[in-house]
Image 1 (cartoon, one colour):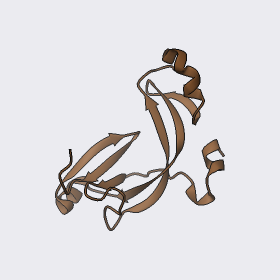
Image 2: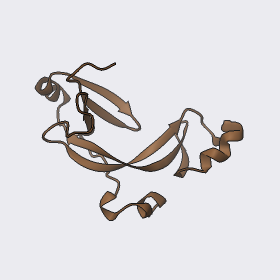
Image 3: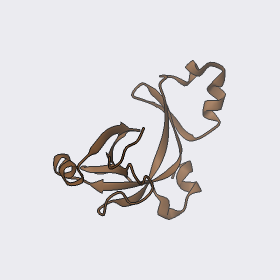
Image 4: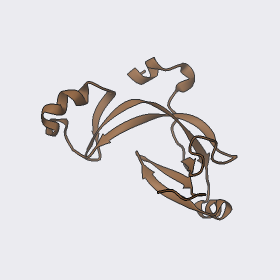
Length: 124
């Protein structure tokens, strides 16, 4: 069990997103259930920086290690786990059908997984 799991209740175990599952949000109500088929899960929140080695942070390297756990390098970026975050997830077998159902979606590659935003109102 890692440091984050020890700090949280057993019901807050990190969820592994499965095939055809996506984090889903809604522009108009970011925290509310975005779709009737969405369900809540806990995910490990990862802090990623666009530097490939902690030593390249110079005098800030000790600050990097003073917070979070599981410090590592992934895909040329330094990473650390900084806690748990509750998100909405939904199984979407066909993104085109889903887009036709909800009318507008934005597809984002966020923090190592795909996020679908139901774009139902204007935002900046």
